[in-house]
Image (cartoon, rainbow, N blue to C red; front, side, top):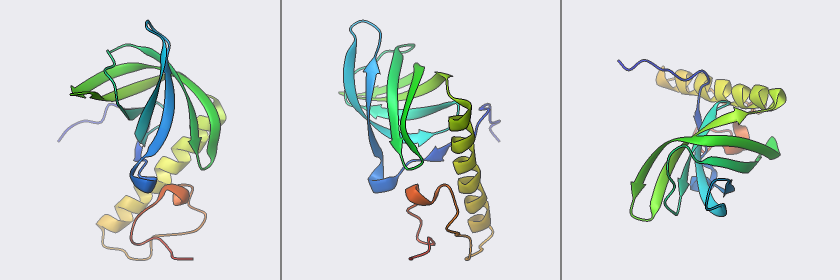
Length: 144
């Protein structure tokens, strides 16, 4: 079994398949790129970018997710996987505000709790106060 090395739990960002995000590459040549956020943790994220991006590139981005609107983050690329004109990026945050860490960790905990309960076959796992609620697309989600 693979040992988890990440400090923070990740959760998928699949609202409407994934969330579009604009990133600004700060290294030469500096440029703005559209990207799709695929998962998030308080320590980093993965993105799909429709361009070639090399490893260790510094970047800036603004999160616009429910509960995380307008949060500016800085980070660097830790890994890349390219296929044609598309690159998957792993990003580690250089600095993240404490309140943002708490919010993202809370969302990840609720997501992990739900996954665990579903793995045990429980049906009544959804609750409205769930901080992952706005991003959830699970079929067990409450309809109201």
